[in-house]
Structures are given as C-alpha cells and as structure tokens.
Amino acid sequence: MKKLSGVILLAVLGTAPSFSVLATGTQTGTVAKADIDATNPYTLINQVSHNAFARIKKDHQTFQQNPELLRAVAEEELLPHINVKYAAYKVLGREANKATKAQRDQFVKAFTDYLIAAYAQIMTQYTNQEINVESPSPIDPKRKVVGVRVEILDSARPPIRLDFKLRKNSKSGEWQGYDVDVEGVSMLNTKQSEWSTQLRKNGILAVANQLEELAKQPISAKEAIK
Image (cartoon, rainbow, N blue to C red; front, side, top):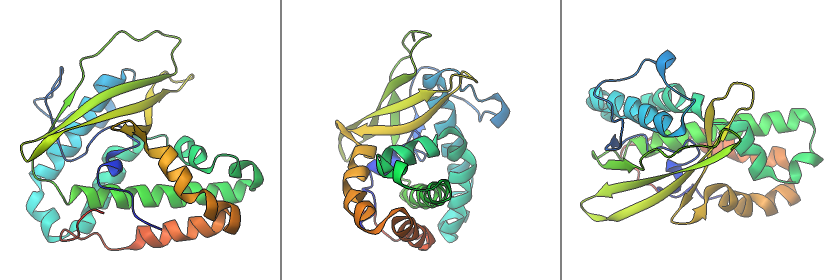
C-alpha cells in the first residue's frame, strides 16, 4: 500500500500545516484553541494553519532533532478540526455497511493514526512556503458543504491549487474539513479507489491493520514524501 502523495497529504483538514498565511484575516499572533472560530470555514483555515505554522517555526530546531514530536502537533493542532469519522466512512463506501460497528470503529482509529503520522511526515518538509487562502464569500445558512480554495506559493515551482471541502455540523454550527481536491482530484475518491479492492477481498480489519503498521513507521526528517 503506497503512502499518500506529498500534496494530497495536505488534505482532509483543508490547510497546509507548515505554511504561513497570506489571506484576508492573516493572524499576527497565535489564536488560543478556545478562540478558534469554527463557525466560518475561511477563518478556520486561516487560524488553524497559522497556529500550526507558528508552533513549528518556534521549535523548528527541536523538531529537526526529534521529528517524532511532530505527531503531537498534528494531533493537537489539526485533528480537532478534521471530521475523521466522516472521511473514513467516505473512503469505506459500501463496505462500511458490511462491517460491524466494532470493525468500523477500528478502521476509524487506524485511519486517524495514519493521518496523524502522514501530517507529521509532511511537516518535516517545512521550508517556509506560503499559502494564499481565497477571500471569504457569503455562505447560505442552508449550505452544509463549502469549498475553500488555497494556493501554495513556492518560488521554485508554479502555484498549486487546492480546493478544501468542509462540512457543517448541523447541531453545533461548526465546520470541519474532510476532503480536498488537488488540481481537481479528490483525495477521498483517490483513497477509496486505491483501497477498494483490498477492502472487498481482505475486509476492513486487514486494511486497518495495514494502516496501523504504516502509522508506526518512524517520522524521519530525511525521508522524502512519495
């Protein structure tokens, strides 16, 4: 089973964790977790990405010496704003209906651990790139899904376009990321296609075990993202 590509791993939440922000509402200081505004998807992306970026920059030398510590950054800064269960079920598709609740729960846990490790590995590639989040647009109160466009700006290559998908919780009114289109290609659709055969042949638990093994791989600052 291959790792997610480097760009696609900037996914699910809808923010590139190791990039500074150039959008409207750019932060000049970190935002306390309790003060992050999840009621607006544009603000959410700005605040969460800035917090993660600032934390990495502040302790950059420490993370270089011990990249494993980046797992905590991913889990604490990003994971609370990802609807992991919804994303995992989207990947499972119809296979979710064939599994027991215990099996689905185990897959969600494995998927979560996998995402944490994936984001931590991406964070080792920090080279002070910048992102440009699109300006906020009015959102119809009835809308449950919103896309937010982000461009990754790097002087060494053309801009990369990401369209992040966020879903609104009907009870809390807060938004969480769950997917991203990278140059028009959906991360969740890609993963569903990649794992569908294994899910059908070997079952959810077999794939969950593979994800757990991948999640246990050491985070290495020298490892290139594939």
